[in-house]
Length: 499
Ligand code: NAD
Image (cartoon, rainbow, N blue to C red; front, side, top):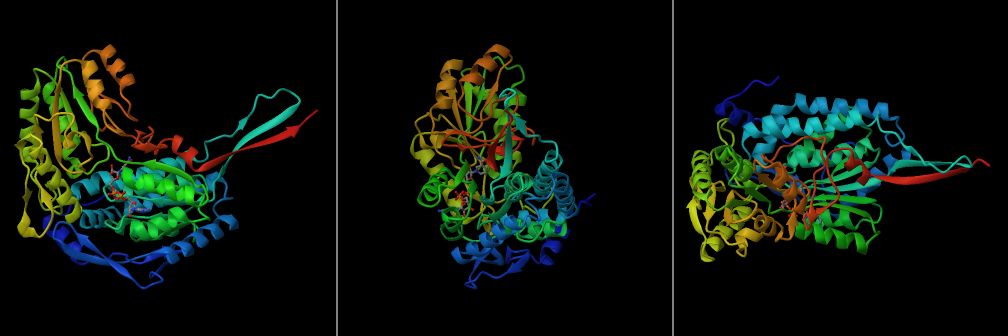
């Protein structure tokens, strides 16, 4: 399908790329009403990539009005599911057809390796949309068991206008996790991508219209969180805000819902996920390899990253030795080089945050086994070495707070019970893993761990068929799988008296 260009040709292509930079409202690209723009910076060079429309309240108002009008008109909301299926399937195909272009935009905009954008992000986004397309005409409503005197129907209806606010770590995939079920259920959508990575969302909006989505059903308003994001979450005519991002912003979004129209809120927030390896696991090399990828993949900018490695006493040295070997080989490189496995941190602010945690870990008494520094400074970009901390105590900030960078904190424990206690002793509950040969121990621990996902003898296994989301302050509601549709539909009871 896609030729595999080399580094030189990716750089050449980057030079001839003209990203879409205006907001997408009512099926057309438009400037922000204020005319304001913000700089989209390539984190691998520190140079400005594009000037993007800085949407604010006025633009959000226009987008919501357009989404509402489209919803009322019914060209999408009243379309038979089999027709919606066709449009969404074409949309997924168009995304795949533009894989190279979208992968390049993603890598330039947020710094992840081009190989990952090509093989993981863009196909993942297309697969998500394809999956909901296929699902949408296979879902039935219910008839309640009321007895012969009545016919009580339980039907699902679209909510109306959904606002989606998404982060920068997997810009298109996170957007697709919202776009696909929201549209499949018949809603209209206003999407606000992160100000750090708006380019792929802006491009796919026109692909959706090309696929046959009526204008106004999918609108994209780029802009800052405290302006465009806030206006969307406070809007009186938005029925639901579906958010992925930090726990701090998630709390603010809930307040906005309370201050405005009590809109429905779903939150996919941060994590500090424990990856627990028991001494009985027979293949420690496999566990260590998975542990390294669980924290270094995507520069550690993964909500479900296995950022706490909990090792049973006795196996620490052998596991950490292997993790270090892999980390050594994953030195940050030019994201446009196809062999690069670790790219740039999304921006200078995030890099400083990561380096700040590395300093804090050392000050609090943990020891750096690997990495710990900024590298490739000559490039002008924001690169941090894969970093491994040993001698971490569960009270340290690097063991409790989300760093969102390639920084692993290794902690030892004696018993499975102690491991579960440490695992649960943070405010988050997104993902987790247990490595053991004992199936009873595995299930006992899986039940005791308070997290939305527990991997057993693997990490970051993924499929669109399973729900993803958090316990505790990692959020509420689930993305992916048929369960995501629950967030974007209302249940209605229609009672018909038969007696
Ligand atoms: P963030 O909270 O800073 O921003 C996320 C989005 O919210 C952006 O679009 C931003 O512009 C917007 N925003 C910021 N302030 C806002 C406000 N006051 N009102 C409305 N919108 C506002 O998060 P981030 O730095 O972009 O992303 C990293 C975070 O996302 C991490 O905590 C990570 O764990 C989390 N995340 C979670 C999942 C998941 O599925 N649970 C997936 C990916 C990322």
